[in-house]
Image (tube, rainbow, N blue to C red):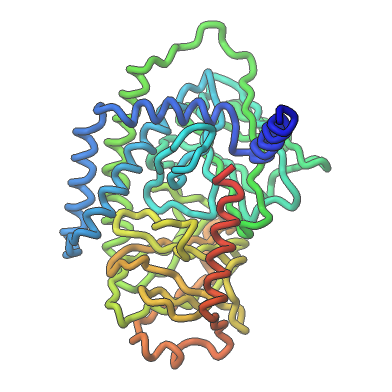
Amino acid sequence: MRLSLLTLVACLGRLVAANPLATDDQRTLDQYALSLYHSDAFDTLRGIARAQYIKTLKKYHVPITEQTSSDVDTAINELVFSSIQKSVNADPANPRVYWVDTASRTHDWYGLHVVGGRYSYDNPDCIYRLIPISDKYTYKIHGRKFGNGVADFSFSLISNPNSQNTVHALYGKDLQVNDDGSYTITISSSHSDAPNHIRSNGKAVQLFVRHNLGDWATETPDALRVEIVDKPAHPKQYTKKDTIAYAKQNLRESTFFYGFGALDFKTYTQPVNHPKSPEQSQILGTLTSQAQSFAPFDLEDDQALVVTLTQGKSTYFVVPIYTDGMITTQPDKRLVSLNNKQSFQNHNGSYTYVISKQDPGVHNWLDTSGRKTGTMMIRWQGLPTSGDGPKGIHVYPQVVPFSRLKDVLPKETRYVSHAQRQKQLQERVQNYNRLHYQ
């Protein structure tokens, strides 16, 4: 019995070790963040944030139904936790790699039950990690790539953890990797012609790392470790009081940047059910090698929004569906997002999606999760940053009665049976769990 128990423990240890997200630092930071989240320190700001989201929705005459109210509550709770997560790993003299902006881990994650910390258009494909930095120090990011890597990844120095504002970035196509999959990135305020160097400045406060998984079954985010070079002997100590104060600052800024900037200015100013032509930006959390298209949707039970789009020069794209709180609903169990590797392609190279409450019986279905209203943010990544990235990317939306779907869908549309849909959903859960449940 003792031998079997030891064998089981060893096997579990190998499973945890195999997951680059399951680190001691992750557990320590999650535990600290949860202790602050369950206090009453953020109750007042939580109410202010909720009021801003509701104000924006009412401005655009979105009915505040029981479902919408619940969705906003969920979004605000996650917004609060995200603000805390950004704060518990904000010391540039004691940097750690921290996985953030992800759905709740209500199962046993390292002995913890971690609440969701998503905000302003999470991407179920993306593993987001942050590392605090300062131009006073030099850092080395030690990474290891697994297999053929992921669909798209980037390392962005940002000047604000809430509005982002990219200072400098290193993109996947420019990263030099050793034959064994290892690599080292240096970050400092000094100029360097060496490969894998990112130059910081007085504005940069954080390295924001994105790893986008196209194939959830096989792709794994890189293992990452940060090293600070010549750490000062007596750096400023970040106290619990400092951490709470910084988290409150994050929440105040997030309330404006997301409750107004993303939900109002970026999304609800757009025509309903009509995703706009994509654009590139360096603010409001967007990636500089990314183009995006925002839109609200409002669909009756017997309606569907059919969206056909082209990939252009992008190497990766994803079409996610969100609540009016700008977060996805059960991304592991529902088809609330599909990327180019998960989607069926039309014969002419375009992709067509059906967004609806009812299951249309097509492979490229995006589930509104029972919602009449909600939002969407389509992303295209791996684009050149010269300014002409969106060229060649087009979006063609149309609302049709559910009964007329076959009249407007391409002839080559892949239809699925009930059994095939169940298999698609089962595989989604299994592949999602590969990283999130170890």
